[in-house]
Length: 626
Ligand SMILES: Cc1ncc(C[n+]2csc(CCOP(=O)(O)OP(=O)(O)O)c2C)c(N)n1
Image (cartoon, rainbow, N blue to C red; front, top):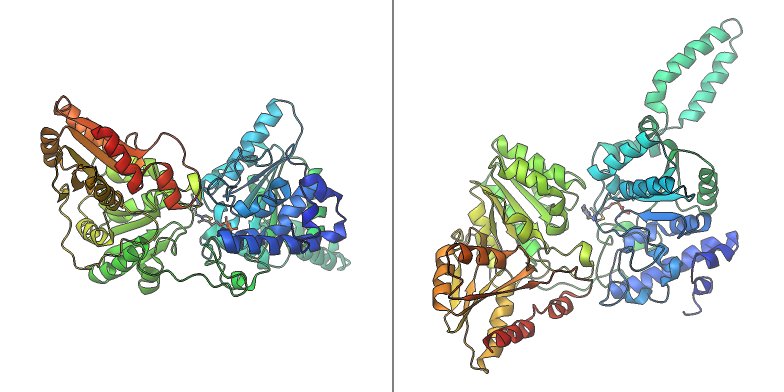
């Protein structure tokens, strides 16, 4: 630790924090900010959320006794201060790197990470579970859920809030309100929170009114009583946090979330209270780093950047996301019924420009993937053409809605499933590895994965006639650099593409694995192995005739996919061949993601680790041919 962090360098755990003088804590906050900025500039990470929660992290660890008291961070992208104060200062430089510490709290990483996170809106429910376990066991400790205003709009958070109010047990919910999700927060709850911050205080109003009526001599008493009744009605309009109060929480705040003494005093006071408490703190996302304060969306989560200017390295070429974004914009021009839905990810899914151009046909519904899916179903049932753009990992939240509200009713929609496959540094909470498995068995759904960005457009064109539920999954990051024809003929549904004829072994590859397989095949040439290579394109419907034909001709059929080996594309091939009685002639080998959670790291490193890079694939084929 360099001497520029004289206070921080003394902190190996919460007890060292407690040993500091209170008046030194603002200086510690400044050191933490500088340390976070310097590190994240090199590693990438969730900068703006964490800069906004520095004082909150300090105050919580000063007042509560982690790990006995449980601090549960929602999403966990704002928890860098918590990590640094709980023994991970020295390893912080390994943030999000392969083998290094995670960007999110993880129970296996530290006893201070009371719950593992990455997806939004889980904190209140998991905290309530801890609360009930504590009470059942007759133990005595505090449980605190820290949730952002964006995450509070998620249905799961509202369910947790509801249960917490009903149970009436001791729990503290700290609402970290910076008026932002990744983009500006949306929804009626966000509007309500905004009013709490800006409306004049109810308490002040009440005392002013009492003073007023008491000073009228003859009628003072009657008026006072009348006023009290009037007040009950007014309370609903003016009392701060009445929504939370009515749900059963004692609402405190809003208070300045950057004022450490105020935070500490308030938290100390809350420790003595019984029942559910909601403390509303107001923070500034990106606090202390001007570029992040000015553009909190860009600095929400990012790769390396210049810590002096905030500039990020330029990306050359188009990403799959940007190709989809441009396609949907062009299609919106041609199809007046096309509507686009995002769940709090207009930038991440590339739909932002569509929203700018067609605001009437664009819905950012906040962190509510389940709602987004059923909302799309409603739009579809009423004759519109919904395109729901969503990350694979977050679509997991919509599983029942996909079955019950979309596919069972056979309602046409286009699901643009972004971030399918390994996503890199965000790690296991964010990899999109389960989608092929959780989508392919749903009746009526068409499911494809393009080999490159040109095929993405052709597949989108195939889904754009809105005849059936239609999902296209594509990876994070740059495309393959091929030219895109925006008017491409629709990819024929259920038809694979033979890319190369060989002998002995046929490889069916899906999505960006096609490129890796073609590279592997080049390596195999020197070994005298000449596989046939097929771009499978569709997981559902499969190109049954092509696959059956290959099974008749080749001794080995290898499937390669960037998704779980269990229940994915390879399994579909295996099921088909078993059903047709073709497995006695041909052996099927499934290359995919093993039955384990894949850690964080660079995508290339992870692909190598799981054997899905060209070398790994060619080694497997060699083994098979031996
Ligand atoms: C279920 C789910 N949907 C979407 C996301 C992506 N996401 C990560 S953080 C975030 C915004 C969270 O906003 P808020 O809770 O207010 O925290 P802040 O970043 O403002 O501190 C979103 C949409 C997610 N992590 N989980």
